[in-house]
Image 1 (cartoon, helix red, strand yellow):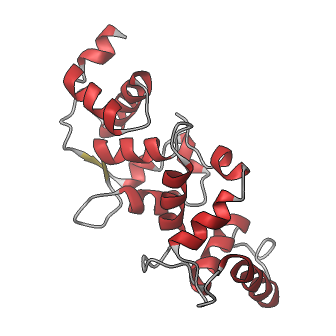
Image 2: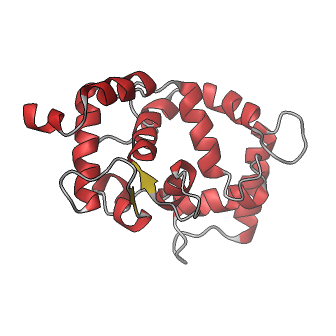
Length: 188
Protein backbone atom coordinates (compact mmCIF):
# COMPACT_ATOMS: atom_id res chain seq x y z
CA UNK A 1 0.00 0.00 0.00
CA UNK A 2 2.90 2.37 0.68
CA UNK A 3 3.93 2.34 -2.98
CA UNK A 4 0.38 2.97 -4.15
CA UNK A 5 -0.25 5.85 -1.75
CA UNK A 6 2.93 7.61 -2.86
CA UNK A 7 1.40 8.03 -6.32
CA UNK A 8 -1.34 10.21 -4.87
CA UNK A 9 -0.26 13.07 -2.61
CA UNK A 10 -1.55 12.72 0.94
CA UNK A 11 -3.14 16.18 0.86
CA UNK A 12 -4.94 15.34 -2.37
CA UNK A 13 -6.05 11.98 -0.98
CA UNK A 14 -7.48 13.73 2.10
CA UNK A 15 -9.27 16.26 -0.08
CA UNK A 16 -10.81 13.51 -2.24
CA UNK A 17 -11.91 11.71 0.91
CA UNK A 18 -13.64 14.86 2.19
CA UNK A 19 -15.38 15.51 -1.13
CA UNK A 20 -16.61 11.98 -1.85
CA UNK A 21 -18.32 9.07 -0.16
CA UNK A 22 -15.23 6.93 -0.80
CA UNK A 23 -12.73 5.53 1.67
CA UNK A 24 -9.00 6.08 1.39
CA UNK A 25 -8.58 2.53 0.07
CA UNK A 26 -11.32 3.01 -2.54
CA UNK A 27 -9.71 6.24 -3.76
CA UNK A 28 -6.31 4.57 -4.04
CA UNK A 29 -7.83 1.66 -5.97
CA UNK A 30 -9.68 4.10 -8.24
CA UNK A 31 -6.41 5.96 -8.85
CA UNK A 32 -4.64 2.71 -9.74
CA UNK A 33 -7.42 1.69 -12.16
CA UNK A 34 -7.61 5.15 -13.70
CA UNK A 35 -3.83 5.25 -14.18
CA UNK A 36 -3.97 1.84 -15.88
CA UNK A 37 -6.72 3.12 -18.18
CA UNK A 38 -4.52 6.09 -19.05
CA UNK A 39 -1.92 3.62 -20.21
CA UNK A 40 0.87 5.01 -18.06
CA UNK A 41 1.81 4.39 -14.47
CA UNK A 42 1.68 7.90 -13.03
CA UNK A 43 -0.15 10.22 -15.43
CA UNK A 44 -1.09 13.81 -14.62
CA UNK A 45 -4.34 14.24 -12.72
CA UNK A 46 -5.76 16.52 -15.41
CA UNK A 47 -5.52 13.83 -18.10
CA UNK A 48 -8.76 12.40 -19.38
CA UNK A 49 -9.63 8.83 -20.27
CA UNK A 50 -11.87 8.25 -23.27
CA UNK A 51 -15.36 6.85 -22.82
CA UNK A 52 -14.32 3.82 -24.88
CA UNK A 53 -11.57 2.98 -22.37
CA UNK A 54 -13.82 3.63 -19.36
CA UNK A 55 -16.42 1.26 -20.81
CA UNK A 56 -13.87 -1.56 -20.84
CA UNK A 57 -14.13 -1.77 -17.05
CA UNK A 58 -15.89 -5.01 -16.07
CA UNK A 59 -18.13 -3.04 -13.68
CA UNK A 60 -19.56 -1.04 -16.61
CA UNK A 61 -19.44 -3.52 -19.50
CA UNK A 62 -22.89 -4.97 -18.85
CA UNK A 63 -24.50 -1.80 -17.48
CA UNK A 64 -27.32 -0.81 -19.85
CA UNK A 65 -26.67 2.86 -19.05
CA UNK A 66 -22.90 2.78 -19.52
CA UNK A 67 -22.71 5.59 -22.09
CA UNK A 68 -25.15 7.77 -20.14
CA UNK A 69 -23.01 7.29 -17.02
CA UNK A 70 -20.00 8.67 -18.86
CA UNK A 71 -21.96 11.56 -20.36
CA UNK A 72 -23.54 12.57 -17.06
CA UNK A 73 -20.26 12.50 -15.12
CA UNK A 74 -18.01 13.93 -17.83
CA UNK A 75 -16.92 17.54 -17.43
CA UNK A 76 -15.32 17.54 -20.88
CA UNK A 77 -15.98 20.61 -22.99
CA UNK A 78 -16.04 18.27 -25.98
CA UNK A 79 -19.15 16.45 -24.65
CA UNK A 80 -17.39 13.20 -25.59
CA UNK A 81 -18.00 11.28 -22.37
CA UNK A 82 -14.31 11.24 -21.45
CA UNK A 83 -13.58 11.36 -17.73
CA UNK A 84 -10.93 13.11 -15.68
CA UNK A 85 -9.80 11.42 -12.47
CA UNK A 86 -12.12 13.71 -10.51
CA UNK A 87 -15.04 12.80 -12.82
CA UNK A 88 -14.21 9.12 -12.27
CA UNK A 89 -14.21 9.63 -8.48
CA UNK A 90 -17.55 11.46 -8.68
CA UNK A 91 -19.06 8.54 -10.61
CA UNK A 92 -17.76 5.98 -8.12
CA UNK A 93 -18.77 8.13 -5.16
CA UNK A 94 -22.35 8.62 -6.36
CA UNK A 95 -22.82 4.88 -6.69
CA UNK A 96 -20.93 3.79 -3.59
CA UNK A 97 -22.67 2.08 -0.70
CA UNK A 98 -22.10 5.22 1.40
CA UNK A 99 -23.83 7.65 -0.98
CA UNK A 100 -27.16 9.00 0.24
CA UNK A 101 -30.51 8.20 -1.34
CA UNK A 102 -30.75 11.85 -2.43
CA UNK A 103 -27.43 11.68 -4.30
CA UNK A 104 -28.26 8.34 -5.94
CA UNK A 105 -31.71 9.60 -6.99
CA UNK A 106 -30.25 12.84 -8.38
CA UNK A 107 -27.76 11.02 -10.60
CA UNK A 108 -30.19 8.27 -11.59
CA UNK A 109 -32.61 10.98 -12.71
CA UNK A 110 -29.89 12.66 -14.79
CA UNK A 111 -28.93 9.33 -16.36
CA UNK A 112 -32.55 8.55 -17.24
CA UNK A 113 -33.11 12.07 -18.64
CA UNK A 114 -31.78 11.12 -22.08
CA UNK A 115 -32.50 14.51 -23.68
CA UNK A 116 -31.10 16.46 -20.69
CA UNK A 117 -34.15 18.72 -20.43
CA UNK A 118 -34.71 18.29 -16.68
CA UNK A 119 -37.77 16.06 -16.97
CA UNK A 120 -38.55 12.45 -17.80
CA UNK A 121 -41.09 12.49 -20.60
CA UNK A 122 -42.54 9.62 -22.64
CA UNK A 123 -39.48 9.52 -24.94
CA UNK A 124 -37.09 9.30 -21.98
CA UNK A 125 -39.22 6.59 -20.39
CA UNK A 126 -39.31 4.59 -23.63
CA UNK A 127 -35.51 4.76 -23.91
CA UNK A 128 -35.23 3.78 -20.24
CA UNK A 129 -37.47 0.74 -20.72
CA UNK A 130 -35.58 -0.26 -23.88
CA UNK A 131 -32.27 -0.05 -22.03
CA UNK A 132 -33.62 -2.29 -19.29
CA UNK A 133 -35.34 -4.85 -21.50
CA UNK A 134 -32.91 -4.82 -24.40
CA UNK A 135 -33.71 -3.72 -27.89
CA UNK A 136 -33.82 -7.07 -29.66
CA UNK A 137 -36.94 -8.40 -31.34
CA UNK A 138 -37.25 -11.03 -28.60
CA UNK A 139 -37.17 -8.55 -25.72
CA UNK A 140 -38.65 -5.37 -27.17
CA UNK A 141 -42.13 -4.48 -25.97
CA UNK A 142 -44.86 -4.03 -28.53
CA UNK A 143 -46.03 -0.48 -29.16
CA UNK A 144 -49.18 -1.14 -27.11
CA UNK A 145 -47.22 -2.69 -24.22
CA UNK A 146 -44.84 0.27 -24.22
CA UNK A 147 -47.70 2.78 -24.31
CA UNK A 148 -49.42 1.02 -21.41
CA UNK A 149 -46.23 0.79 -19.35
CA UNK A 150 -45.38 4.47 -19.85
CA UNK A 151 -48.96 5.38 -18.99
CA UNK A 152 -48.69 3.35 -15.77
CA UNK A 153 -45.33 4.93 -14.87
CA UNK A 154 -46.71 8.43 -15.39
CA UNK A 155 -49.93 7.61 -13.50
CA UNK A 156 -47.84 6.47 -10.53
CA UNK A 157 -45.12 9.14 -10.67
CA UNK A 158 -46.47 12.31 -12.26
CA UNK A 159 -47.90 14.01 -9.18
CA UNK A 160 -48.64 17.36 -10.85
CA UNK A 161 -50.14 15.60 -13.92
CA UNK A 162 -48.12 17.60 -16.47
CA UNK A 163 -47.18 14.51 -18.51
CA UNK A 164 -43.59 14.39 -17.23
CA UNK A 165 -41.70 13.32 -14.12
CA UNK A 166 -39.51 16.01 -12.56
CA UNK A 167 -36.68 15.41 -10.10
CA UNK A 168 -38.88 15.99 -7.06
CA UNK A 169 -41.47 13.49 -8.29
CA UNK A 170 -38.73 11.00 -9.13
CA UNK A 171 -37.23 11.34 -5.65
CA UNK A 172 -40.68 10.78 -4.14
CA UNK A 173 -41.10 7.53 -6.09
CA UNK A 174 -37.58 6.38 -5.23
CA UNK A 175 -38.12 7.09 -1.53
CA UNK A 176 -40.86 4.44 -1.59
CA UNK A 177 -38.52 1.86 -3.13
CA UNK A 178 -36.18 0.42 -0.49
CA UNK A 179 -34.37 -1.75 -3.05
CA UNK A 180 -33.27 1.27 -5.10
CA UNK A 181 -30.30 2.22 -2.92
CA UNK A 182 -28.91 -1.30 -2.71
CA UNK A 183 -29.30 -2.01 -6.42
CA UNK A 184 -27.94 1.31 -7.69
CA UNK A 185 -24.23 0.94 -7.08
CA UNK A 186 -20.90 0.38 -8.79
CA UNK A 187 -18.24 -1.43 -6.81
CA UNK A 188 -14.65 -1.78 -7.98
